[in-house]
Image (cartoon, rainbow, N blue to C red; front, side):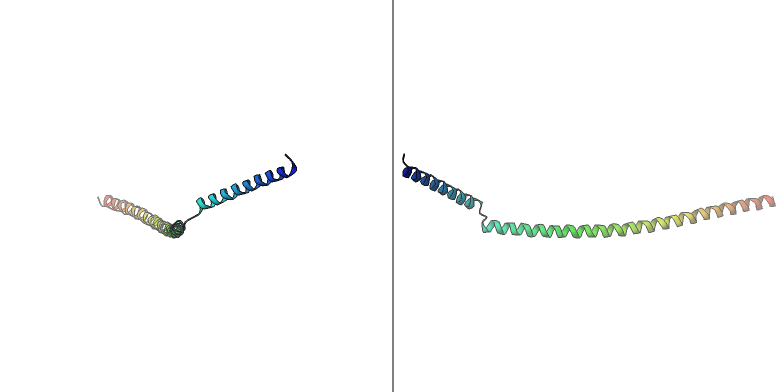
Length: 110
């Protein structure tokens, strides 16, 4: 094989390799191409996801505000309960004092 035949053989091999590479690229691009219907569907999914995230954020904000409100209400109720229990304790002590006084008076008269 002389020099000219070697150059022609290398040129043919390189051209075939280029053609195969171009064909492979074209096939990959053809099969991985996104159709307009798929693009519309992806856009709708993205919009639905965005709406769902907004709804989730609103729900979280509502739950946090509701939790704060309920915590405040619970603290107020506990304070009222403590005040009522203290009042009841004082009323019982006063009742016991009155019973004791009445018992002393009734024994003093008897």
